[in-house]
Length: 200
Image (cartoon, rainbow, N blue to C red):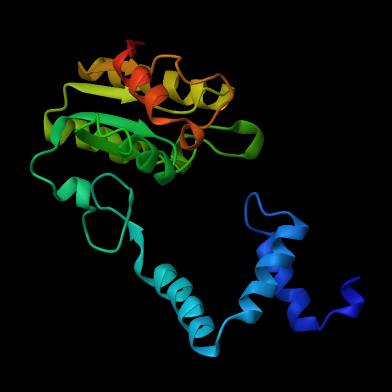
């Protein structure tokens, strides 16, 4: 079928197909939609992608994504800096923020320990987390990694690393189904998981 398509259209479909959760049919729909845009809108769309790629980087404090030195959460003086919720991805921060029940700070690991995929502790932002604990008088770290084998391994590894520092380490309660990702959990489930966290 790709032989019937213009090469530039086939390339566009291939790029959309590389996005997570986008199958071949959805990629085709997106590509045709982009082609139906006005030239001005298409340029703005392309510019938005390029600009985001150039300007967005990791927050100097929590490693969340931002286009400034510190993200809005770290800059917010009303947030409790003595409690840190550790998550795998920036998407997880957005999911927890939807609950409007958590008013402390975050730390984004940008992944989990996964030996099968060649990801060890050094590939994550664990050193930055330890530095924050030493500098910011942190009293509690909430491990909010996903309820997967890799998420559990990462949570246990970090808890053992932090225990000698005298920090209370808790884990989200299992209101979140095992094997599920935080970004797909509803607000009520996340609230219950936060309320029922336990020490590990």
